[in-house]
Amino acid sequence: MGKPTSPVVDLNAALLLLLLAAVWGGSFFFAEVALRELPPLVITLFRVSLAVPVLLAVVVLRGVPITRSLRVWRAYLLMGALNNAIPFSLIFWGQTQIESGLASILNGTTAMFGALVAGLLLPDEPLRANKLIGAALGLAGVAFIMGPDALQDFNLTNLAQLAILGATLSYAFASVWGKTTLAGQPPLMNALGMVVCSSALMLPIVWLTHGVPSLAFQPATWGALLGLAVLSTALAYLLYFAILARAGAANLMLVTLLIPPFAITLGAFFLSERIGIQAFAGFGVIAIGFAVTDGRLFARLRQRR
Image (cartoon, rainbow, N blue to C red; front, top):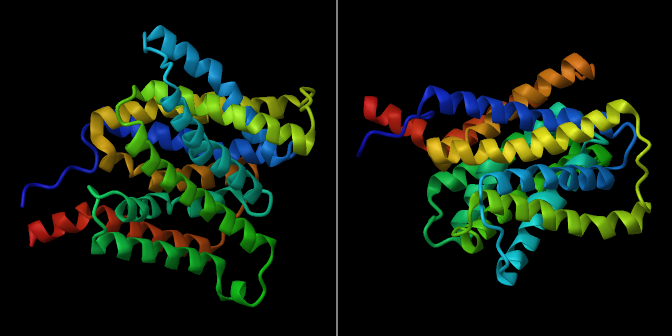
């Protein structure tokens, strides 16, 4: 067996990984602020639509060709639904019932469920035992967070927690769809295509459910929407692809465990949120599930032995 890959390739990649965790962790905080004035679907629309001009400017400045292929744009349409419109809406609705920190902890199951779905659907990513065990531990962590009472007294809080899990499954299917249909496209064009198409999807949905959104928001709400769009979406995509090029997809998975500490800290300092010990224990089980799914930590321990 060769030497296992280092969890972080170099210092620059590590700093970029922390920055990505910060901006994605910040999305839960920004959403919590915006939810004080806006409904979840409207926040989703603004998050993706305000990110379009930023990513378009980056694509143009870097000379990335904008595809004219209808086949590719159809792929972007489904990718925009699976990776943006559906999960963002589910997470934002979930945050109307649970704390932002708890939402980020549940979102930490993304890597495990992503590996499980890929193992089931992609022939080049076989479903090995570690993926099944990791997913089982992820579900165990979620069950620990929800508690045994959820089976007897199911309420909106439990439904919100399931909504976050629904978002993680949507991300998992988006990953498979992207690998099978968009692997040959420029990464920045993929990011732009996703937000353009998810904006097109959200516009009629918001119009039908809430009418034409007003722009007369409080300054704090505008700040939160810009934070979601510019930092947690546009900048996050740029960081994502930079880390992917430097450290690879396996190391990029680490960000799912780094997001909750940022979200919990922001929620505690600025929103007076308090996460119970049960949630932290559940996060610990989820973290173990991630380590099992990833496999490199145990490979290192076996090598040392």
